[in-house]
Every structure is written in structure tokens, then in C-alpha cells.
Amino acid sequence: MKSPREIDTMRRSGTITARVLENLILAARPGVSTGDLDALAEHQIRAASGVPTFKGYNGFPCSICTSVNEEVVHGIPGDRLLRDGDLLSIDIGTTFERYVSDSAVTIAIGNVSQTAQRLMRVTQECLMRGVAQMWVGKRLGDIGAAVQEHAEANGYGVVRELVGHGIGTKMHEEPHVPNYGTAGAGMELRSGLVLAVEPMITQSGHEVETLKDGWTVVTADGKLAAHFEHTIAIMEDGPRILTLRQSGEHPDASAYATQEWRAASLSGKGAA
Ligand code: MG
Ligand code: MG
Image 1 (cartoon, helix red, strand yellow):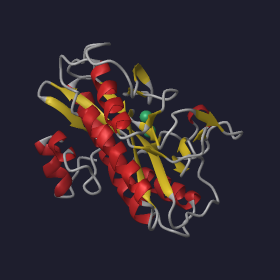
Image 2 (cartoon, helix red, strand yellow):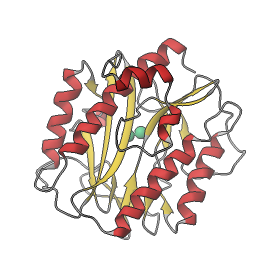
Image 3 (cartoon, helix red, strand yellow):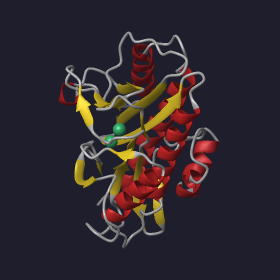
């Protein structure tokens, strides 16, 4: 459990993550390489007095993960040029004053198929349905069940091998936060718990494989995948998304930001 002071620092960390991610979303277009996005992310995180959490994490070589099309998560940025019609997942983490924030989105590069658009929309909805469960007295299984139910109702698969997590001074803390589960089961949610919730949803089968680079996770059937993630604090009066962006959010998301955070954020005077 984090103190209010710790959560405030995490909010400031989350503000950096959210702003850099917004800029990456704007920069990602056909002809831009994933390595270009990585360089931009590292520069902007450091310019905001943060440290890119992923760089060097278990030997990961870059500041963000860029996963294209059938790649689910942990893609390594490099020379690959984004092409019209690609689905790009960007995952980013910032450490600021020792506290980590972690967030991810999947976006369309140029014009993508209706199929891809639907997968992105439903995955973002899965995240918000998970967040909506994050009230004191609810249980961990309520989050996973809400995500799984929405994904499967839409005919999609839920990746099992990778899960969300507690987060604080370390990127990955207890507990694990699966994107599947049984409502009413698991650990009780308490005020001060901060979790990274991150549904990884596939177009059909949920099996995944890891490529020979040791990092990139792909769908076993080669179909598309999408990934959305926020860092969220459970407060007495409900969930607070600490990595909320000012644009490109799910319509319900702003309901889960604090008034003061929103005011600071909208006036461009975020605490960071
Ligand atoms: Mg992440
Ligand atoms: Mg994460």
C-alpha cells in the first residue's frame, strides 16, 4: 500500500509517461522507424527529469517497447519502418523520484482495417472495464473477470502468460493482475494499492510465443493483438488513473482522474 505522498509522486511520474506517450502517438506514422520513436521517448523522458524504466530492465536495450501487428508485447525498437495499415503497440515506463509509472496503447498507422479498429476499441474498453472494478472491497478477480468477459464476448482471446502487476519503486511488484479470473475471488482491493492493469487481447487464439530475440512476444496463430495499459491507484473514493492522457483516451477515462490532477494537467502545469 502506498501513502498519499507516494501516490502523488507516482502521479507526477504518470504525467511524464502520459505526455511522452501522447507525443509518440503523434509522431508514429508511415515511414517513421520504431527506433525513431524510441529515441524520441528517451529524450523526452530525460528532459522531464525522468529515467526510462525499461532501458536495461533485465537487459532490455531500449526505452520503449514497440510491437507491430501480430507482436503482442516487448517488441524491440529498431530500423523497422512503420507502414500504412500497421497496428502499433507502444509500451512505456518512467521512473521519477524513484517511482515508476507504466502505460501502453495500440494505435493505427495510417489507415487500418475495420477488423483492426474493432480489436483496438474492444481492448481499450477491456482496460476501462477493469479500471471500473477497482474500488475498495472489490477483489483482484473482479478486474480479470471484467476484462475477460468483454474480450471473449467479442470473440477475442486473452493472453494468459503475461499479466498486470503491482507497481511502485519497482516496475513489477506484487500482486499479479491477470486479465482473466473469477469475480469475487482473490485478494481484496485496499486503499493505497497501485496496480498496472494491462489487457493483452488477441484476434482469435490466445496462445503466444517468444521470438528468438528473447523478447518479442507474438500470437502463435499470427493474428493481430492489441495492448492497453494504465497505472491506477485505488483510493477511498475510487480508482485514479495516474497515466491518463489528455487525448486519445476512452470517453469514460477522465472520470477516473482527480479534479486537481485534471486542472493541473489541462492548464499545462502538471506537477512534473
Ligand atoms: Mg507496460
Ligand atoms: Mg506493465
